[in-house]
Length: 325
Ligand code: UT7
Image 1: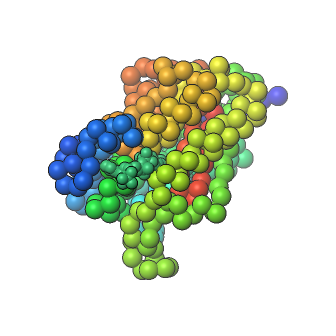
Image 2: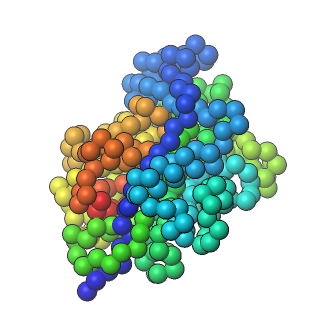
């Protein structure tokens, strides 16, 4: 029996020009390159320029994804944008992207699941495509976390950066087998009991301000590996696959230690893990498509490869996606 699958037609990414190194941070606050690299694997992050908004990063990533797919923006009828740092409280940053691309049909909306935003957006777009409601989706993760960081808090400001990544999905009929191309399964989770472990201390309804990111880093770390691996086991169970079948593991790029520990627990060898956290830090919803774009561009991820994605972040929210490129 055939199945409708959301097949990836292309991907792209964008990082703002300005790079902020660990050494530059160490000149401003009580930290060191050695501490940051050893605890997180991060060496630098990109910072959006004055007047450069989340939508601008998203538009650049979207254009790169459209070029990679070799398709016209007019064929896109759905835009789902994962972000926790929108240009404005409303309207959605996705409609700014839609307008910039000259698209006046279909639907565009934002989705907020913090660092899991891309997985949640991908899963949402996949669900719409499989129902037949839309044909081609642009799924974006875009963030300007530099705007919500407390630059005096060394426990958080060294960890995050700005960036955007995007993929184009198309609803296609596939044979309905494990060898199908496209998204094979997605699994989303959240547990609001952890909402104060990683949050922003402001908002339109509570303080009428934007606020700053606050995090109990050790608490997040403690839960991360268990939650990530649990939701990956769900993906394996749903598809009858095992860790051995995975060609590429493209995790949320938050901390190299979390990625290494998760891969180790899953028995995924290091050479199958795509790691870019050193180059851009934690870019929240943007990190997975940023890493994917690197691995596609350098020829690692190829047509037919089985690719495993996962993320975990504020809420807590967490999720996995298994797809064949
Ligand atoms: O998408 C999810 C987003 N969040 C995450 O993934 C974060 C998860 N958590 C982590 O990655 C880690 O907990 C951190 C990288 C944030 C911290 O690493 P840690 O090994 O858990 O360190 P810690 O918080 O236990 O702090 C150890 C020490 C403390 O000093 P004392 O109390 O031992 O004297 C901190 O004050 O390191 C100190 N410290 C720093 N030192 C130098 C904290 N931040 C810094 C810093 N530079 N930037």
